[in-house]
Structures are given as C-alpha cells and as structure tokens.
Image (cartoon, rainbow, N blue to C red; front, top):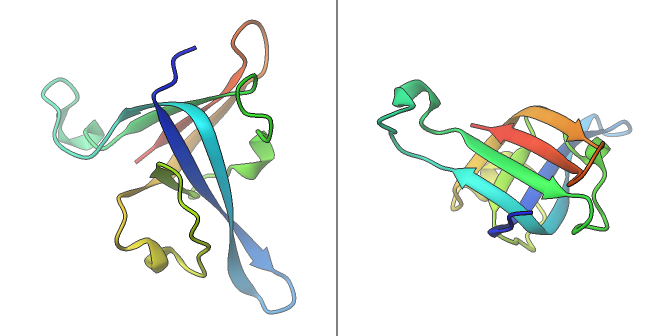
Length: 116
C-alpha cells in the first residue's frame, strides 16, 4: 500500500427542513494522492488536472464509501474548517470528485476516487 498524503473530503448534502445545502467534512490520514493542476505532456490539456486517490480500508477506520458522491470536494491535506458553501474554500486548491470505485474485494481493499 502506497501512502503519500492526507485528505479532506467535503460531502454535499441537503437540509430537508431549510432546503439549503450542507457540507460534511471527512478527514483521512493514510491515502495515495497522484496528479494535480497543470498541463501534462503525456496526458494533454484535457486530462492534465486529473487526480487519482486511493483510500485504504485497512489504514482508515472511519472509511465508508457512502461518504463520497460525484461533485463532492477534495482538498489534499487535513483541514479542520467546516464550510457552508464551496466558496468558503476559495483560498485552497480544490478538486471535485468525478468517479468513485469501491474496490472492497481481494487484497489491499480501498476506495478509488477520480477528481478534476
């Protein structure tokens, strides 16, 4: 298992009473984070801002795949900041989740997240 980073995920929800969006923060200490902002020679401009993330079940006790959804916010590192809207993260480099795969079988079980 490769581990090179920590991660904060902001999961978007809806308050049924107020009909306003809510953001629940999840922090993970043992993740593999690859990619980032910028142009890549091999990937071209379209895929240059992609990130690939693997969060290992074995190394993250609080890992639950239902805490992720397409469009949720990814921030590399650990943030203790609770937010009311995405704009609250304007001072941080953020990505949005574009794909989620729950690889919960075999050896090295993990959640694989793609982001842009």
